[in-house]
Amino acid sequence: MANKPLTLRPYTPADQPACLAIFESNTPKYFHPTERLDFEQFLEKLPCPFFVVEMQEQIVGCGGYGTKPEGIIVLVWGMVHRNLHRQGIGTFLLQERIKIILQKTLATRVIVHTSQHSQDFFIRFGFRQTDFKPNYYAPGLHCVEMELALHSE
Image (cartoon, rainbow, N blue to C red; front, side, top):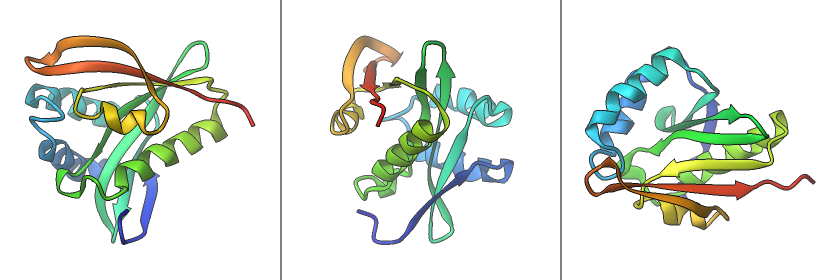
């Protein structure tokens, strides 16, 4: 777990350079370099709620979620700086997004499209694989579609 306090706050345009640096730190293993333009355009348009994770006033992660019909939420562009993987930051980002989703939506399911390199992370939180698309993002970088059922309390 990260030994410094983590905070989640809404993304602002001033955060774009830090978020792009986080993206770059995760290429080519987790993201293909050609996805950068898509991410940059996403940040400029910001079509859905998007957040940054801060540790000691530095942006160390980011991610958001979009809504689909039928009570489905899609996690989007979740990432942590590569040098800070396996320190609990991704767990914090995922748990905080799910907490917000439960507070602000009537979602019944959360889905994520990730790669084979991150699927075990999501399995730890109860996500199950629903589809697999080989070489989807790039040769050797597969798409794993996963789903988590949300239960009302």
